Length: 220
Image 1 (cartoon, one colour):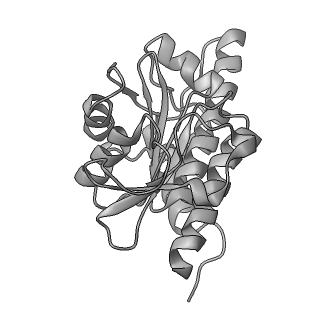
Image 2 (cartoon, rainbow, N blue to C red):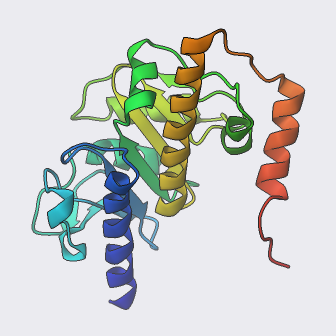
């Protein structure tokens, strides 16, 4: 029971963090995390304002998107999260946002090109563009999985929609979504000033390897 309550608090806080980082408007956006059993996940309820969100409202669903525990209806993106968890067993957290600059790139049907060291560090290259799909079934999830499978990037911008980000847990996925919007904004501003000067692949590879394997505090 303690483990469940801890995860409720974590998932609730991370959903609220989407608003704190300016990644969502009104009740849009969602964060989920895979449960310890690997066969279910926890996600926020649909249409509840972030100001009113509390840990006890978090919903537990199975990997088909069926509600196992919870009094409220789960996020309208639940089937997308479920599809990702079913088909990407290494993923422990999923985030969806409509953050402004990343969504702007999606509206012009363009991947976000790698013109910043921060992009090379975090995403290992461009942030790819995924296909358009309507909400309500598996189609968005299929597009996310298809685009990110075998790709270094932990984020994808779906055509005319927004960002889906994945990670080893929900915290890592939220970080990816935050960094996606940050580099989307900078590259968009740069594009208005002139031609983007892209990083070469050799430099991207070196930056990615350093950040992923050397940067920060490493345990013994």
